[in-house]
Image 1: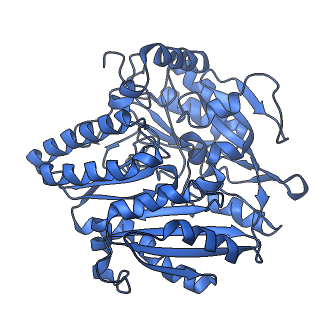
Image 2: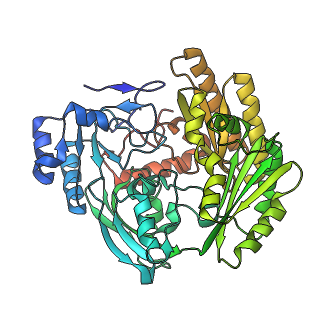
Image 3: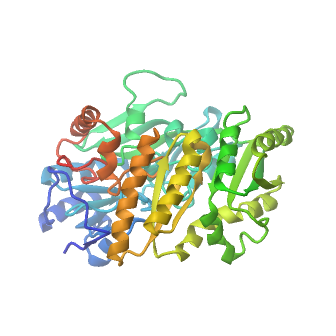
Length: 483
C-alpha cells in the first residue's frame, strides 16, 4: 500500500514511530469525532497528499480535514489512543519534505480551518486559524492601513500554519524579520492531546517561558498549531526599487556588505549570479541588461513618500563602485514590476538546466558571501553540475540550486558529494544550514554537524515532553539517533 520514492527512499522514522496499517476501527474512531465527510482513505485522495515540493513522496494511510480547534483536540486523542502517527500539512509548498507523510502515518490537513477569528486594527493584531492563506492576512491588514511583513515566495497559496512551522521568511526579512517576529501568541494541541495557549496579545510580555518562539520553527514536531495571534505594522506610504548590474559576483556582493554597514536599511536586497542571468535570457527578462552583466542586485526601500528619494540616494551611494555597470531606479508600480521581472521569472527559468532542482537555503555571514559564492562556482566546475545561486543577500541567505537528472546515478553521486561539501563550508564560515525552508527530511543527516550532542539531546527531551509517543511528524527535523 505504501508508495515511496526519492533520491533514495522514504524518511527513516524515529524509533518510537508507529508502523501500522489503519484498521476499520481506527478509521471509524476518526470519523466519529470529525464526521464522515472529513476522513478520507481512498487511493485518489491519499495520492494527492503524498508529497510536497520535493521529489520525495509517501502515500499516507488516510487524510483528515479538521474544521476547528476542538476537532484537532479530538483527532489527536484518537491518534494517541491507537498510536497513529500524524503528518501535519498546510498547503504542501515546503521544499524540505516537511509535509511528506511518514510511513504508516495519517495526514492532518488544515485547509478547512480558514477563519479570521478577530481583526483589531487599533491594537495592530489579527487572530487567524492555521489554514488562512498568508497573502489574505496581508490583504485584510492593508484595508486598515496596516500590513503583515513576512512575505515568503509562496504567500499567494501558503498557509499561516506552514509558515509558523518553518518560521518562513522572504525578501523583506532583511528589514522586518521572519514569521517568528510577528507572532504574539498561539493556540495549539500537544502530542498528548492537551490544549495549550502561549504568549499574549501585547507586544511586550515576559510572563513564563517563551513557548511561542519555541513552537514557531519546530516543524510540527511539538504540537499542532491551530490559531495564531499575529502582529501587524503600519503600511509604508511608498516603495521604490533599484536594479543594479555588475560585472562579476564579487563586485555585487562587496556592494551588499557596504549597504549593510550604512544606516538606511533596505526592505529587500536580492542577488542573482551569472548562471541565474543566463537562465532568464531566453524568456527576454534580461533583454535590457547592459553587455557584460554577470551579477544582479535587486534592492527595495520603503517609507514616507517625502523621504524615499533620500533613502534611495543613500542606498545608491553604497551600492555604486567598482564593477557596477548600471543603476536603474523606479518609484511607480508598473516600473517597479518591470525591474523585478528578472527575479520573478527565475525559479521557473532555471528548470531548463535539468528536471530536478535541489534548493538549499543556506546562510553565511554577509562578509563571507563573496567567498562562499566563489566556492560554489568552483564546486560546480569540478563536479560538472549546473549550480544556480540567488537569494536574500542582505541576510546572507543564499538559495543554492543544484540542477540535476535524478535518473543519472553517477550524477546523483556527485550531487550528494556536492551537498556535503556545501554544508561543511557553510558551517566552517560560521553559517547555518537553513534560513527559511527548515530541515524536514532533506537536511536531517546534516543537523548534528551544526548542533552539538548536549544541545541536540536537550531538544529531543523537549520533544519528548510535548509528544511522549513520538506521533507528531516522525522522521522530520531530528537526525536518526544512530546517525
